[in-house]
Length: 451
Image (tube, rainbow, N blue to C red; front, side, top):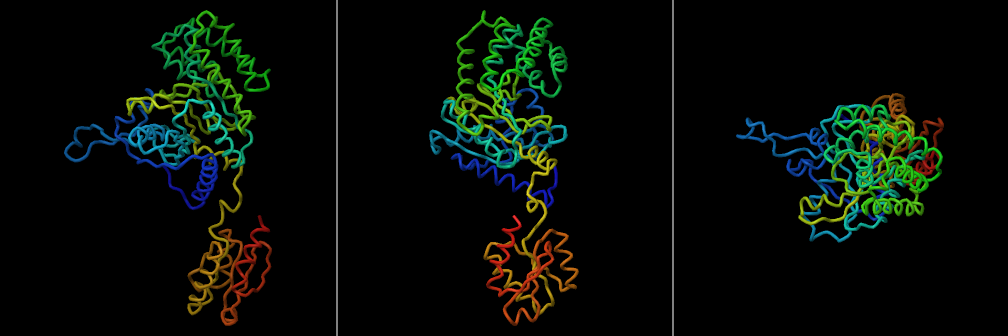
């Protein structure tokens, strides 16, 4: 949990503003929920590991000594959304598309891009099982990242039912499926040897581990030869059938899941996400509430993902008593900021300057005129910093330069009497005098030329 200085806040607001703008262009509506939820709302929704990372709030007052918890800080924005939909179903449209950008909390071990308090930028659609939903979600997050300057990201996609069929074909017992998925979910972090060690630790039988490892190895070679996500998917389905003998336990669920993934990949070719889609048969996503397609966004220089999501058709039903189709995607603000900072992706003015122009103060008598001028400039849309102390002008200009403020307005006795103002361009080391009524337009034009 961190403090954010002005430069940090400006960067965060820049990213949030870009993401919010894209989400709204796709027809998603804003939603906010409390930081605190009843602990029963959160427990049992994230799997064993997730439950251990929930920040619990002890009972208060006379119950404090019991050591029991009845509330908790929200772990993500999806479960609170499901509660809201169940609670306000009659007030919400049948197809409800919402975005939510708020902090969440996890009692996790801090690392690069991983914090105990962090913002998620969620976008979800409820009320439809159509693959158009997933295609639009992928398009929305793809547009958001592209607008921020990313061009090397991939959107990995898989299906929970296909993972289930894979584990069954490998002979993994049903009671160990959750453990096996946790191990597979670490493939991109620990590699095939690490997954094998994790499977061993979690009690998966040797013959099942061997079949999974053989398939993992074969897939890594096969993925390099196909050129599109759809081609990769079809090739890997065939390889999976051959390697694991899955044709002997073919099921309607497997065929439906395969068709669902195929439909989504075909639809995304008509959207900005098409060039970024990657089919990954081992993508697992650790959260237990996923029921169908799962997705994750990665960039090469970040161990972990920039975001992820999937379909969770049963989650609202845990609160409502009847299931409502739902699918969502979450971008991780903190990790986006880490990568953008390391790659120097921010426009210079986002990170450095608190104002477009600073009005210097010559003496106490001129303060009123300075404030009037500031009001005029602000009314034109400029960000204005009024220097409060009548210090040496050189010192005031040096302050403006150190803060990255590009223009200084000099308002001495002569300017006040004539209704003019002298504007100094610090970068160009030039200055010009304007009527105060024309100064705003001149500064705005100079800013436009600076880019």
